[in-house]
Length: 448
Ligand SMILES: Cc1ncc(COP(=O)(O)O)c(C=O)c1O
Image (cartoon, rainbow, N blue to C red):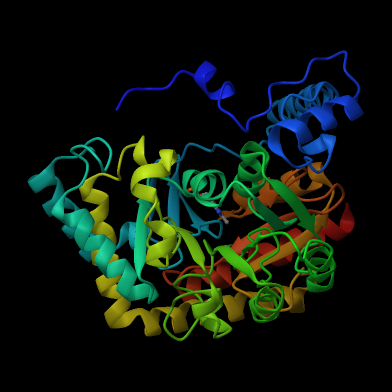
């Protein structure tokens, strides 16, 4: 299929041209309304807004200075190039570091059986991928994976993408109808915010997990023909579960559809491991569920499940699905093996994961840490200051424990957190050692 030039895009009907700088916002909004048939919510959400661009330049340069400052102080906590993973630890410059930053919850990336399946797949198919699904990229192993995933999630239809970011873009930009009104939880993954902005569809953000705020918006737009509520199943920065039970009631009341990104929920929640919606017993009311493979499956890529009638257009209309490589067969074969293991021993794995989470959560609370959620497998510890959180993470790292700091803009200013995640692979000795380091770091935190 022929590539489209970006310039062709701007000529498509329905897309507003980049506004000229000398026009006022009001004139621009009216131009949008004429072209798209609806108003774009605010100048903030517009592509090409000059003021927004200027603000972004300032933000990026501030961020750049912050990164440079951290690097000069030896506190930059990201992009650490370690030698290799080692179960629930990593090896960094020859030292074993306990890994409490991983989202490979079941340690499938290191699972012996899955590695064996991957080696066999490499011998059979080679190490790389083959084009898009519409060309040479659709092997029998991909079809088998689609079938198994549909069964695992209890849904009719499955699409596989090479990343979760892309899957979210594809759903919002291409699958949701042009006249959709989107109600987006404020704490959704950046890819969903980005997708809404790029889609030029009408969208409104509601306060994190605030169903009253959501209802007010739904009420205000009750006559809109195509309403979509978009949320995460589990919020990755604060570990809170979306109130999917209440959201399902609202969706029914206002005839809205629901799309959830359940990256951190699938595998971890629900008696059938189908994620947050399974936990709340509202799986049937979820129209679309997206899940990347790197969490519960320890792999790469993502899938979307939903009703056949919703996903059938993917094969003709969803460009981010059609014009991109399928995941390589070695990944498809490894994920298939992960699914097999989940089917046989998933319940035990889930139990072990929750035991580890409970152990660490209780210990951290008894040390005195402020944890931002009362329950949940992601444990976000409030530290506050952006620099302090990096110092904290560096200190933990120097003492052999890797935790993930979250700073602005991933979290609000002054609310820097450390995200602690356990996996099934952590043994009692590793957890006790981590707790000791946390206790020491807490004393440092109080003294500084
Ligand atoms: C909630 C959520 N959605 C989407 C993504 C993006 O997935 P991917 O890394 O496969 O693009 C992530 C990645 O961490 C995520 O946490």
